Amino acid sequence: MRHYSDEQLKGFGIHLNKIKSRFTKMTKVFTHQGKVALYSKLVQSAQNERERLHVRIDEMDIVLEIDNCLTEVEIEIKNLENEEKDNSMEEWHSEMRASEGDLEKLKAKEELQRKLLELEEQKEQTLAQIDFMQKQTNRTEELLDHLSLSEWEVIEWSDDQAVFTCIYDTIDSPSPLQSQLLVSLSWKSLTERLLT
Image (tube, rainbow, N blue to C red; front, side):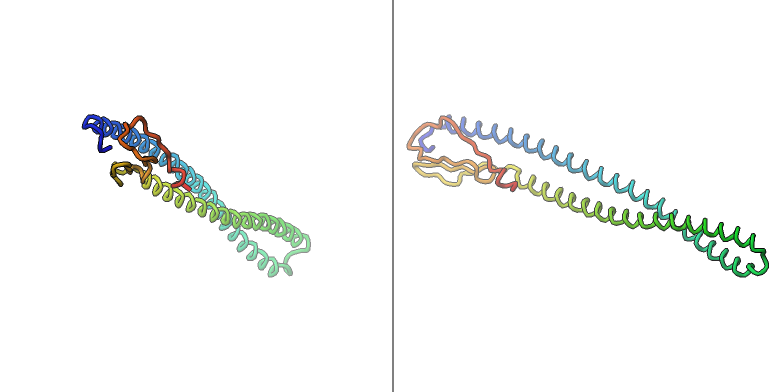
């Protein structure tokens, strides 16, 4: 390239700046699209988790109601035991049947409580997934920042070869120039290697 005329060097510089400008714009667009997709996934996950928490709050209200019912049943059983001698056998049997019905309701509510515990486990798994997605988002943003363009720089300049750097050492003249005109440039992408 030392044997190039000023016009050829100027033309080559203009061509490189156009490529750099185009690549910068494309990188910004891809970066923005990637962030939009990741943030929309995070927002959706947060909304889903919020809905699950509302369901859990409703179920906890039911558990509190179950606890109150259990207390009332225990008080009723004690009252029945105290009044057993005073009541006739028929009344006592009727009250026992009512107590058995209450116990059945309590069993159903106990089953609901078991399901609440399962929901708690699902909540922890969802929170772990959100944490994983946040880490993936951070990693992707770091990669996107890493892929931003650097300035064109000359790494090596000799009589028979010129090596430029742009986008982390991606342009190299593989064979000596030997006073030849630069006819074309070949590009290869190293972004796949960076992303793995």
